[in-house]
Length: 197
Image 1 (cartoon, helix red, strand yellow):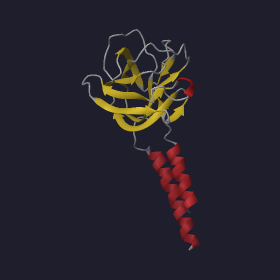
Image 2 (cartoon, helix red, strand yellow):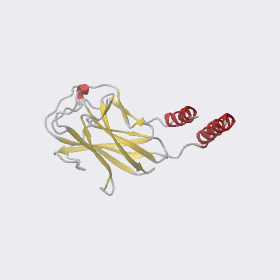
Image 3 (tube, one colour):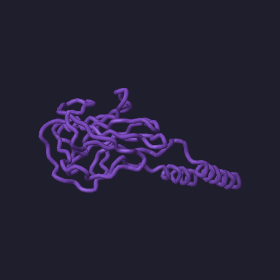
Image 4 (cartoon, one colour):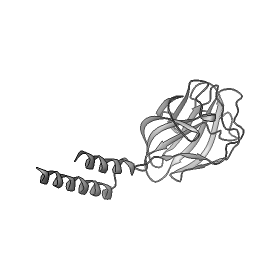
């Protein structure tokens, strides 16, 4: 009985795979010339987004020279922080980024800025080498020289790929079909358990 319930729960959980805000198509010339607060401005599409983790670029995947990287998402209009984390060298590595778990909702139609501070670590220096998810509309870049998460536009020539995030889709509420399947599975498991008694 426990195995059957676990199977249905695992299948249900597995259906909610996380998506990435951006994917790197080409990693050009990682380097650094100081600490920068890199910002990527975007607008959420037609559906709310449930952010499940914030990510920071980890060159070579061997941890951060700085020990951790500050990453945040702020409301571009209000300047308020929606969610923030210090991504650690021990956090989960997925592709070129390490991810720290968070839980936040970005509202459909609202404009946000994802910020990551490079500190002593390398960042991707080539511009335009990533694809953004179709769930957001990319608006602009903006950054400045600092060691703190800062909403700034001293420089705007490009994005340097320091930050990323994972999200669980348009809603944290399961689709009706998935709920029906889960209910059917648990119901059948319950009938089987009752017959054994």
